[in-house]
Amino acid sequence: MATEIIMPKAGMDMEEGTIIKWLVSEGDKVDTGDPILEILTDKVNMEVEAETTGTILKIAAKEGDVLPVFTVIGYIGKEGEQVPDASSSAPAKEEKPEKEQKQESIKSEAMPKQDESVDESGKVRATPAARKAGREKNIDLKLVKGSGPKGRVHVADVESFKAVKATPLAAKIAEVEDIDLSEVKGTGFGGKITKDDLISKDETGKAVSATKEEKPVEAKERKLIPMVGMRKIIADRMLESVKKAATVGLDIEIDMTAAIKLRSAMKDRILKETEKKITYTDLIIMAVSKALVKYPIVNSTLTDEGILLNEDVNMGLAVGLDNGLMVPVIKATDKMSLTEIVQKRTDTVTRTVKGKIKPDELQGSTFTISNLGMFDTVKFTSIINQPNSAILSVGAILERMRIIDGEPKVRSVMNMTLTMDHRVMDGVDGAKFLQYLKDLIEDPTLMLL
Image 1 (cartoon, helix red, strand yellow):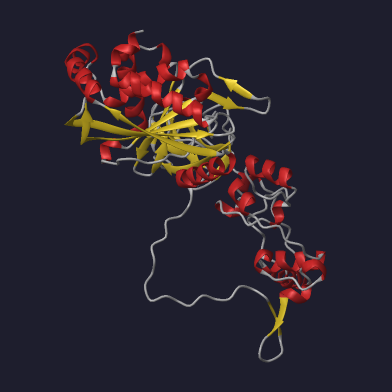
Image 2 (cartoon, rainbow, N blue to C red; image 1 turned 60 degrees about the vertical axis):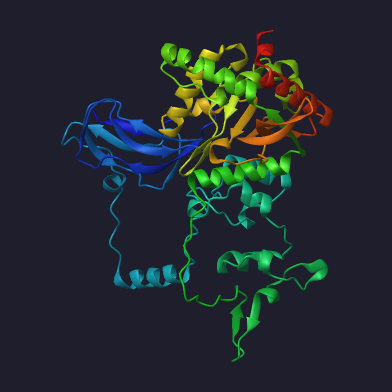
């Protein structure tokens, strides 16, 4: 019996996945463990491996399809083995008289084209988050224009939707004629849109739909990057974070002289023991973890019940990729030695860059570090990685003239910016955290206490 290839549930929160690319074709032979396709979850791209050895008998879903978890998308089995086929099992249509066929043809031509934004059950295609947002805002998703595949409504579409008032007849006309009611000015009572607002007259006096004006054709064709996949997910989450948190940014300058000496003194020893290179990020992770234990409010999460002080420090690391950004999580960094941090950080970042990180490893962070120092970025302000209450932006190490003991001296300095949620903590909390972090990095021996 043929083995089903299903859309896997790659993580506790995953409800659907997008097929990015099939790595095999029908008729190809595969072994157990061979990668056969790439999918996009709501957090990461990942490869799906063959669960058995055999031949790819059928590919039932095409690239770009967005499907619920556990949906059958193909079959593996013995060469020549039969697999279920919806088309072959469908009953044959009874031949009808020519007159009836013509009547049905005229009827089908008069009917409006099936709206792809509505699924087979008649429900609007929408993500679970979009449905929840629609219920909370009392917005009918039928009125929202979806930006996803087949008109699928995302939470960002609901957030940006402008509520409009229209008569039932006007709403029906807009649905059939595909008119965006948010761009129509209503002349009815209280600004309500009527059918007359959707119907205008051309020069001959013929009624025409009040559709949008055609834009002039431009001489040069502009390159358009679709907001889909990872880019769309990042956009939705960044917008959600900005709308949700009341953010404040605090800057501090840190003298990295002692940290540079420490890294230089330990790099050969750690390389010998772990075959990994120690970076300034490793030292910063250790110092930040220590500071978060002393100031747990910065390591907290805002819930419906109140502010939750997390017991562990689960460090999120922003990792830039060619096609976007991921934030893998290193759990319990407050309980790790420097050597353990170097090993875990190296492994985590390497697998993230290679696309081998698991969806569950992108969840559960309590604080996040974003380091752009390697690109000579002096200072920047990051957007909070929800549901964290703060994020630390790390800049480049630069040589600057500073006054030390009354004398001008060249020092290696680094700027750090703490973006914090003012709903959770006050400015003094963030300032104390940064001051203690500065003390730890400028005198690393304090981390031994």
